[in-house]
Length: 250
Ligand SMILES: C[S@@+](CC[C@H](N)C(=O)[O-])C[C@H]1O[C@@H](n2cnc3c(N)ncnc32)[C@H](O)[C@@H]1O
Figure 1: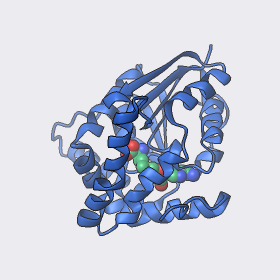
Figure 2: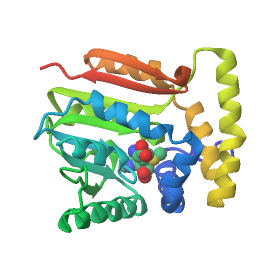
Figure 3: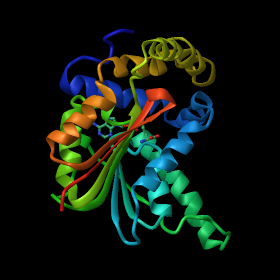
Figure 4: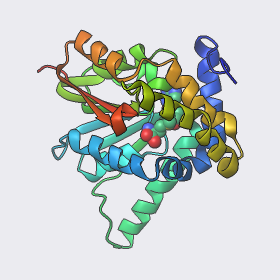
């Protein structure tokens, strides 16, 4: 499995796309299972950090099945979710239809708005400069051929004053905790993937991709390099997960 996804450029992107196509239908279920539901809390934390004002425009990059996009829309943002996987977007759009049909039947639902989902490539976001008040990415940067390029694009489409937020797996500073956590990613996560999704390698990819991703500290450095203000790292579970936050200066 090692190096499977680390072919250069286009080839890597195609492999990542193929991986998400294969797991799309079970993605949400497996997320709940593997994080014991905690990913919902972390995503809620991201949505709260975004400090949405009614009418803000938000972009959820690498939106997948849309968890973060729905959370931002629920708080009143006009939200776009962008992903390159048709299969992940199919699940996102099915969720959206469910919400819309409940609203039509006047069944109470917390969503004020629903996101729009579009297919696109994160290194070339199909929006002009300074288009969004909030630009977030959840578990997405790590998957890109160049995470720096992804962050550059997030910065480009952010308005002055916009919040940029990154949620992803992190690298704990404590060596013992890091070893335990990496062992979990190496052994139990692929096993759960095999048992519940019939696919161990797709879940072994999490550790593989994390080893190639410099995680929260480098993302914070890059944010400082982009001259973002109020750059913060919020470590979760002792740094096993992390949120990076920064504001594009007005
Ligand atoms: C681990 S999922 C995260 C989904 C969602 N953000 C979440 O937090 O649950 C990563 C997503 O990134 C998408 N992705 C990977 N590379 C991409 C690219 N170059 N452009 C757009 N989306 C990409 C995949 O299709 C997948 O849906």
